[in-house]
Length: 318
Image (cartoon, rainbow, N blue to C red):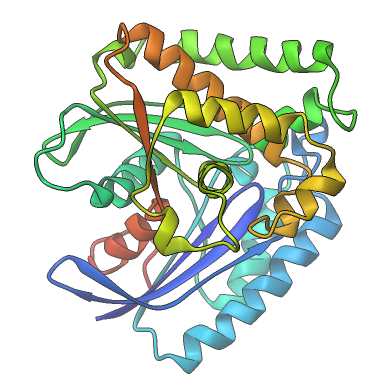
C-alpha cells in the first residue's frame, strides 16, 4: 500500500510518501518546509495570518505530490501549535479545502506513541531497555519511555525550540541571564515529567526532530546535511554538550553559514541545542552515569504516522 503522512508541527510541516510492506516503510518522497505555524502562539494564543498562509502554500505543494504519486491513504497530524490556538478551526478548514482530509489535532499522548514507534525503529536488536525517546519539537517536547516495542509512560510538555527562543533568548547571542532563565524553564519541566515518567530507569536514549539531528550534524562536522550519516549516530553526552554550547553562543550569522543548517532553524537552533543538552545532563545525573550516550534518529513521528495510515482503522485516514 502506498500511503501519505503529513506532520504539521510548530516550526515545520513535513511530508512522507512511502510504500508499506509487512510493517516496513520504503520512502518514495520525504520533504520538509519550515512554515513557523506556531509563530507568536505562546504570546497571543492565535495562529498568525501569515503563518497560516505559509502552511497552506506548503499543503498545496504536498497535495500535488500526493496526487502525482498515487497515494491511496493519507493521514495528517497536527501537534502543539494547533492544540493551543484559539483559531485552530481556520487551520482545519484551510487544510480540508486543499487536501480533502481533516487534520487530526492529536493529543500529547498519541503524539508520544507515534514518535516512539518511529524513533525506536533505529535501534538494533539487543539494545538495553527501557528506551527513552525524546521528541524535541518547536512548541513541545515529548518524553516517551518504552520496552518490548510498547509505551510504558509518556509526557508532553510545552517547551520547544520556538517557544523557548520567543520567551527568553532575545539577544544575538543570548545573554547569560537569558540562558539562565531558559535553563530554569527546562529544569522545571524535567522535574515535572519525572513525577510520572521514571526517567531514572532509562537505559537507552534516542533523540528525534530537527534540533537533535542538527546538533548531531554539527558534532559530526558534516559538509552538508546527510540523513544517512546522522541516522543512528551515537554520541557521548559530553561531546553533545560541547557542541550544543557552541551553537547556543554562536552569532546567528555564523550559524547561517554552517553547511548543514536549514535556513528555518538558524534563529531557534540555539534554544534547541540548550534543551537537548540540558535533558541529557539531567538524565546522566538521574541514572548515576549509566546513560552516557544518545542516539539520533531520522525516523520519528512522521514514520509513525505513515505506519498508522496503513491501518484502515486509523482515525483521519482517507
